[in-house]
Length: 112
Length: 114
Image (cartoon, rainbow over the protein chains, first blue to last red):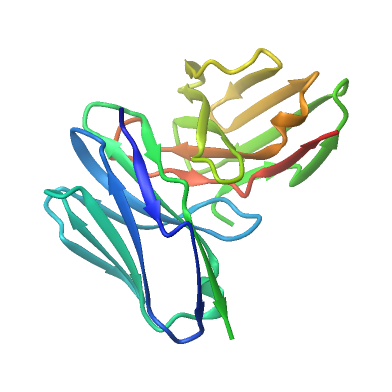
C-alpha cells in the first residue's frame, strides 16, 4: 500500500532558526515528490517538485532533498521567518498512476 | 490568489439543509478535483473530472453530489450531511492527469455541520 509518513507532526522554533522536516514514503514505482506549504485557512501551494534523478532543489530559503534509495525526503528551512508558520505537506506520485499519496503534514510554528 | 477560486469560504449548515460549494478556474486546466481535508488526516480524494467527465468517485457517500457543467466550473452539492462531514473541502485543478502534472488548489470551503 502506498503511504507517506511525515515527521515531526508539529514543530515550534524561534524566528531566525533553521529546521528540517522529514518525509518517508513507500510509493512505488516512484515518479516525483512535491512539498506543499499550506497557510491556515488556505489551500496548499507547491514549493518544490523532485524527480528520481534529483538530489537537491532549492526555492529561496527552502531546500528539499531526495534519497530515492532510502525513499526519504527532507525540507530544510533556513533563517525562518514568522510567515513560514504553516503546515508542510509531502505528496508523492507513482509512475503510471494518476493518484497522489499525501502525507498528514508537519505543523510548523515560528515564534518571535 | 492561485487562480482557483472557491466559494463560499465558510459554511455552517444543519443536517437537513441542502447547499452547494462552487469552484472556478480560468487556468485552462482540463482536470478538476474535490478533496476533503480533516484534522490530522491526509487529503482524501473525493471526485475527479477530466474534460468535464467524471472519471473517479472514491466511494463517497451519495449525500455528496458533484457537477461539472464545463471545464472551468465544478460544484459539490450537499444534502443531509452528518457532523463527521465537517471539514475543509478543497478544489484543485491540473492541466492534465498523470504524475507529471502539478495541482493548483483553491483556498477551500470550511464546512461545519451542526
